Image (tube, rainbow, N blue to C red; front, side, top):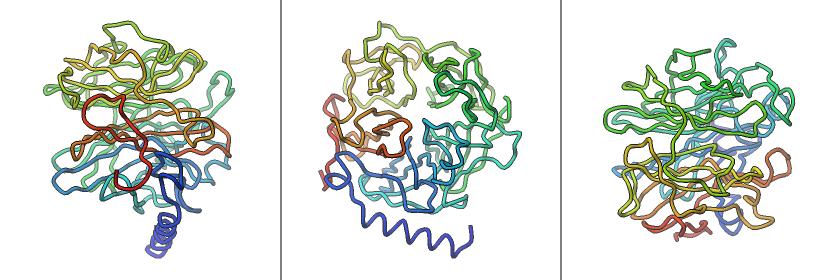
Length: 370
């Protein structure tokens, strides 16, 4: 992107951030909505992966974004908001400022120009790992292959696969060459429609990666587990295992997950926050914990976070979460939406806060410093 274009784009973003607030103005919880015209997120955004550096106090957010031109092309999966990866920064984790990246329309990572790659049509992010000298981005993408996808019919881009990228500054990203089809890091293990929404964590001796696989009719979702000593060579462990029976809220499985060191007092070693799907396809947020990162125990017997009330910007569903522990509180970022496909449906990235302890005390941010 030319310097002049980048400056103009940043100016429009700054005007938007001054004009459109969160909380009472944007709706309870909303911290980032669609961007200004011409930005990579001027149509849809979601999947916020947030990192807080306790040493510098810096907050960073990476999220997937789709612009109006991509949407109007009709080439991307209609129910998703994926397209490119964008970035924002914050001094407090509440008020966010978009940062112009080196890729198209201000993104930090765009689809590959190589048509043979798995991520040549669109991208989505689903996890971020901070390293001593940079970050790993766990992402997924699709190419122009057309597949039959249940009620959606013939759709390009839904043959999605997972990828991995590295960065020293969070802005300039370099893809890691995967050993699977099109340069992806993992295959589709069960013969389903896709393998997407990867998330990964290190247990002290190896990486554990969890990835969503969907049935061809998009009615069943399974979480497959892989391990690796180096994040390069992966071995399958099968489907994610629970030690207890599920409830109505996750009868349809889960779509996205995050695993982190458990901040809940007296809990098991790892905490997993996941997007639960009920039998009717409704989405809420649930939690589980684990001693080894492989066998999980559901917490509370009910969701910890629900969609907003009728008419709210997040009234249909909440998903794609990120829990960050900072300043003695839980910061819970999520994707909220009024509709999966309709243009007029509002959507964006939300924030709820809670004291350390019971996740069921999460409360949507309403603006201000609370």
